[in-house]
Amino acid sequence: MYTSVPRVVIVGAGFSGLWAAQGLAHEDLDITLLDRNNFHTFYPLLYQVAAAELGPTDIAYPVRSILREGRVRFRMADVQRIDFDARVVYSNEGEHPYDVLLLAMGSVPAFFGVEGAEEYSYPLRDMDHALPLRREVLSRFEKASFEPDAARREAHLTFVIVGGGPTGVEYAGALAELIHGPLLKDYPIIPRDEVRILLVEGSDRLLGAMHPRLGRYALERLRARRVEVELNTMVTRIRPDGVDFADGISVQTDTVVWTAGIQGDPRVGVWGLETGGLGRVVVEPSLQVPGRPEVFVAGDLARAVGDDGEPLPQVAPVAMQQGKHLVTAIKAHLRGDPVPDFVYDDPGMLAVIGRNNAVAQVFGGRFTGFAAWVLWALIHVAKLVGFRNRMLVLVNWAWNYVFYERSVRLILPVDRNGPGGELDLGGGGGAAERVAAAGAEGGPAPVDEGRGKAGAEGGSADAVIRDGAAVGGAEAGGAAGRRPEDGQA
Image (cartoon, rainbow, N blue to C red; front, side, top):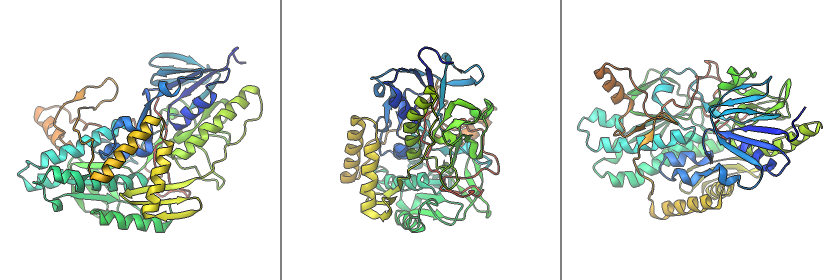
């Protein structure tokens, strides 16, 4: 039995949570939206923040500004537990009783049990990862420009990206353009041939969820941009000063970027919800939790299946469409009517490799080169929240395109411990330097800034990789997921 005005609590201000909140905002409902951040992030362009092409405010927008009109109350809060029997969400800001609950908390990096991956690699999951990664790359060049030891300089200037899905491919291309464009102009003392960008993928091709021809095109264009691409290459261990591969080869590096996969927020399993592969909550076709019709799950967190019986990919279009579906679904549930099933309309996939080069599998066709690049740019700008964000992105892209410059090459302090943590004002030393320093002081080795922060409790050894199979495991069919698309709460 509901209160006089039904209470709807939405956890997560990502695509599905925000889209649902906007759609319900003018209904006669008491709606509370919870997220640990006060902004919505457009995750498909997050890698450009890490590659110094865009600033964080270009792809983020205040949640309160989005929800000014309507009946949605926003609380900046971190959800700690949920009592599903009492129908109460507990956060660090208090209790939030509900009649209907939507969990759209998104995902965290999945490290699949690879030794050292969580401790010594840089995930690219959210803004708390993108900014430290940007700082790390720029700081490596600062270090290398005055490093007399050849071996240390090589480690500074070697960048290993694990995972050949869209995120890995796009970041590799953007990093190559950053380094071989403005950075080497800024550091003329560094020879071009001393810089090494290595993209490793465990399967036999890049962009496994797209047509093989598009994967081959991406491979050719990356190699033309001085990116080394190693296929059928499995990572077995990540060390503070390098990466070990299954074939016995090791690479000395200070910077490893982890784009090999994501999993559902592990807290839901602790709270008692049934999860399937990659920690995603098992849901009915309507996106309701079995046995708890008042609880809906959407976005990266939901293990919704498509017409082929396989889990839907963890991408923005799925989350957006689920958010819109939930407007109808929640209203139907509150009326006591049958809740309709969610049906995904796949709009296709796109990935950009760099200036004038992209791949697109949309509108029933496959495109490469400049045409795909224009499609990619138009679609992404159109999906950005806020006119100001669209204009900022267009201006930045135009500046970069005309002048071959990146305007946000700033080495800024970053919060290494998340909300409430201390600012790290150091010089961007890598993991090896920090481990060595800790050993000299007799203290525990610290985790490098931004590394392994996103609460991933570590994927199981047999977990499936969805963003490139660079660390083992075989996908049990279906299209691979690419990016985390939902908010955090």
